[in-house]
Image 1 (tube, rainbow, N blue to C red):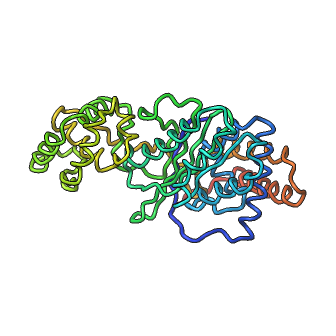
Image 2 (cartoon, rainbow, N blue to C red):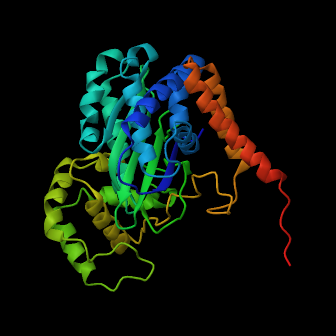
Image 3 (cartoon, rainbow, N blue to C red):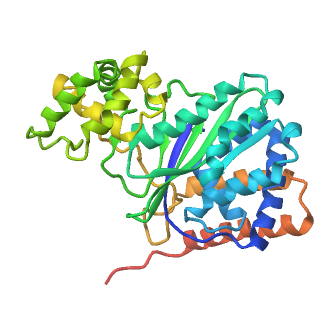
Length: 371
């Protein structure tokens, strides 16, 4: 399984009807029980970190297959469905949408007595994963949903979502701790999106030198930094430069630079974790990194391919049958092992069977001839 992934989705409003959400809660509860019983809580984290599996789970639960609501509704159903089973499962769920997401650190600490690690290490992982996807990767999406899953042993998974209101899109970001080597160096191993775009990517491998310079610059005297930013605002920057000096206000950055100067972060990760260091501060330091030292950050969108199985019309690409079949197989095994009520089980399995029959029919259908 990839340790992280990203999905791009159409941004939809509204909410799931109560009758549907109640059923999603019951079915997701049984699916979680089945997976944890079979493979342990770590297996559930691995599944949730896979954007393909997560999307397929939304389909089986009966929710819209491609809207932004899949993220908030599926994570909400899992949290609601397992809230009285967390200690028994060894799987804990914190966070959510909007104001609920800001309570994540407190919710983690409340479960501290039931885990084998210092809960502050989990709070740190929660905070830094959000800051990476909102500040270190600037792809136009503002984080507004953050769900944090963790086990008694301290393994964790993040499912969070950002919104771009102007574009009408949302992006979902998945994290998994087990094989995470570095928070700020290529943490995304399976990034998925319908379309790539120009993004300031400070966690790209090719941004390593820029990250080092940025951390060094953050320890400089604020007056020196502000002076250099003022100079940069009057320069004619090269055409390949995508960090605009026009939207950087030196006066507003002075307070943040004073804080970084006094605390002197040891590296980019520590700088990123500091309170007050957000997208604008990082853009300013990235600009100075290139202007002063010629160390340009990467503008490679971490997105590499579409999350979806594809479509019969070839958009965004022809149906990925191997991934499609893998999703069906994973879910069928989970459902068969779950202790579901007969009615729910039959309905879920029928949906999976219909997927297979439709795919078999498409494969057997002769290709139309031209002319």
